[in-house]
Length: 628
Image: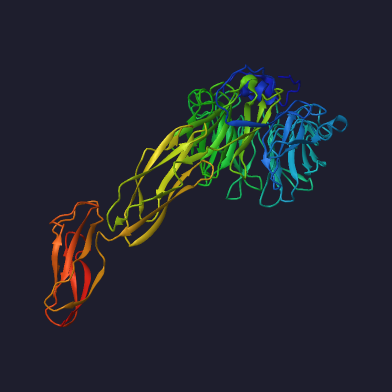
């Protein structure tokens, strides 16, 4: 990979991975994730599920950060380096992979337009994009360190600097906005700076701020270390209207510089520390948090870069009142140093780790009720063409996931990739019970086979059937590994006569979920006597007609028993193949003759009584006696 010379913020100190230091990113992550300095070992893999849409080559940027999908369907993002001035870019990329550089930072003298954007862009209500840069700007107190800007940029690439940090003495208005902005319900923007503020002394510092769309900035809070320091993650506005976020270090932990916090801050600036990390021996709860989202259950979920059982980071849940639960500790093999988390449309949490996995260069994962599933390990292709060190991950309108890698690709400067959802195929798109099924009786099983035809693990949430159809058994568990099959056995139990329909539904994280298979069958009486009527015409009194034949059919799956046949009037059974029982799905015949005893029309009945629920079965008999 081509090496880059810039070193944003104080993270380049490269401290060892111990709780509390600003350099807790570690040398490897500092180099690979923030600066893209790694030389990638050539590794091959037979499967590819992550497809690079575009590879950066330096001239169009390097070290891309998180994407967003805009209202026009295209994706927008920034690169932290590269471009015309080696200071980063804003880019657009279409879903098909056509990349356009919209803006090159540091295009103005002394980089007054900013340089080194790291946070994710947002598209505001006015349709424009807003973001931050770590450095640059025209702040009067900026001395070349992490100062930074807030900018607005149109889809056509016209950039306006809304605010330059370090515009006040000693950077009391903040410095080095590492994270992106959010637009709150009041229409204003809110964010953090990793440094600066009124308490900034040495390692302490950072702010929470509000800025109007016109560029008027109000500092809501300055961190002093005891309540946290170095907020590097984006804020999230909770459903209660307050803002929630994390600080990388600081807080109540007794470790060096503290291990970070989760905080709540009101729109008026009243801050409450909800949790301080590493308050337990050896930090099983993690340290250095930087990702926080609010889920549909109302709780917040986030990640720590380090700590946990194996010191490879954690995923945690925290209630709005501050009760924290560590959900997962990464082990390295399943990922290390997690970098993004989001709740997908199916309710599950998907994310990335910047390191670890099968090849050591990061993963895509999903959290299920059964635990963590590693969906993909980066750098699985020769020369890491599919990218390495992934960052943000989003689910787009098409249901697939898109993201960026800080390194790898054709030129080693990072990629934009798409990660498809699993593809499901079925042995049949419809199932019909061809043999008529007796009312109230359960049919024989019919089987539908599901195949995960992609190499991505499928997560199965629910399998169900509607109507008079039921799932009798299944070999499908909570997950199905790529390329594998499972089966579902179905039964049909009609409750009404005639054709009936239903649906077999699979709810999962695959393309097209819920996928459906059409079901149909026909309900019939348990036993039938046909024809329903017979006419014998005119017959001389005292003579016997030719026999007419009736069929008794057992439509059940069990033997029909206690069969008794009778006729009324001048009709009589002349012969029959029926006995006291009739096997399942079999039929027998009954021959009936007419011997009138007097003139006139006779209407009588052939009746069969048996063990069927619709017993007796009857047919109408009609004939006319004459004197000739």
